[in-house]
Image (cartoon, rainbow, N blue to C red; front, side, top):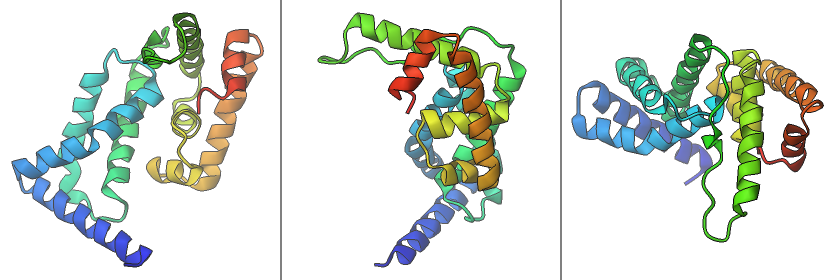
Length: 200
């Protein structure tokens, strides 16, 4: 099977699943939720950096997904289409809230053999400072930065998810990065995080 044939098969599967979900097929809806919940949660987490309202936001995403599935035409992968809805929900959440100190939960608890408690605490503090800076960055720039720099998605994929041109996406990431680096100049902990590449 060629790469083109594989993409066409995925597109057909996505379209069939979307149509089954839109028709009210509960098994298909459960499958879609199971298959994409990790993507939705991770995307929200990387953009917002806090778990405080995460479950409510995940629910908000799926309300919009199931409300909109009848309009899905398969021009993009279903996962990309859902990621696009997720970024819109995250953008609305950013615009609704006032800048506040971000949760320290952006770095997971260490597993066995992972860095010690002191290093994990330092990483949590640095990550919290990063998200505190991002709270003051333009929301559209923040999303592009989070998806590319924190989540590590290629710029082209970020452009597709955010429904923007590649040039606009590069500009948004650059502007957000410049603001973060400007503030990092006055914050040695944040500067160390950026220098170590721990956001990638």
